[in-house]
Length: 152
Image (cartoon, rainbow, N blue to C red; front, top):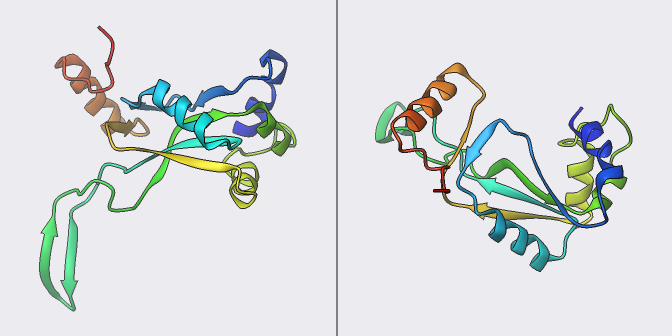
């Protein structure tokens, strides 16, 4: 599980904070700003919060009457886990073993103990969980318009 994989890196850490990502999403998040934010907050964990791209058109209804419509509004579900973290090695104490799911007990305990903060990213973020999303990202890359390509 995700927590178990994190726990296994403990021997490679030198006591400093480290970055972690799932690797299934692309973003133009500024890692330097993310790390600086994490350090300034003084918490054990920072997650990058993102507004997900809308998948469906949003209807505003008054009973059966449509009073408004917006096609695929960004973030209509609210802020979500964007999958880019800065973590203190102390978060590994919240992980029991290989069966621990990072997104369950460890993240929940960090939040309830006021050791978790969110860096709100307003830029590009896109998961690649489906074939449709893979094709979208490939088309952006092939067109030379990949927003996550921030290097020269």
